[in-house]
Image (tube, rainbow, N blue to C red; front, side, top):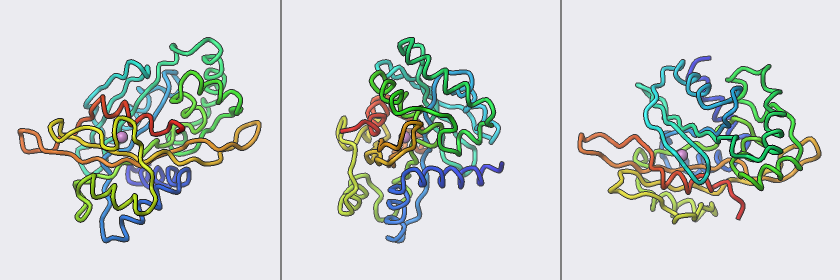
Amino acid sequence: MHTQEFFKLAWETYTNTSPQAAHIHNLIRCEGEQVINDHIAYRTLSHSHINMEKIINYFKDHGYKQKGDYHFETKKLSAVHLEHPRQYPKIFISEYDINNLTPDSQDICHEFLEEVTSFSLSDLLLQKRNWSLSFENYQKLKEESEYVSWVASLGLIPNHFTIAVNQLKRFNTLEKIIEFLKVHKIEFNQVGGEIKGTEKAYLRQASTLAEKRKIMFSDGEYEIPTCYYEFAQRFKINTGEYFQGFLENSADKIFESTYEK
Ligand code: NI
């Protein structure tokens, strides 16, 4: 699949799961702005069928190069970011080490992950969860890790897209875009402050709260947090180029955009 086609479908998957993202995108475009993606984030688990290495290789096949790597000790997560030499957005991939789960929860994960072998990675990245999961098991996983329950319930679809705030004309700071979207009743993640990061650290970020939507489980339909939209304002480093990395402290708080209040 051509990279451009992949991102078009990824956006469709993301906005089908969270229509609020399409609404936000339209609100900004209606102000005459062109929306550019800073990065797209994926979440996965440390299981050979879907691990971070597989997703990294998928994007490398699309011309991406691996750049930074990150660690989130308390959340048991590691992450990398990849950059494309040309026009495509950065990719941020995080992975939870399932060895930290209790044996019961590991069994739940192994059970549904046995079902994914018949799918290609592009199927997995572009289709909502292709495995069966009960709401009961979702809740069990959630008690141990909100992150794991998110992947188990939604699969490997984009967790968030991120608007490059620098590229906007009228709303070129986080304060301006947040103020505009709040008028339209959009709620933001307040964990660690509404705006995370600083100009000194060359990156400031903010994100909406994940939209709650009804998702089908094997024992019924339940409303759960799905995807959120992020905003990144980057600053220039000594070389005169924009900082392209991520800040562990900020990302750590942004992961909590899918937590229920
Ligand atoms: Ni992000």
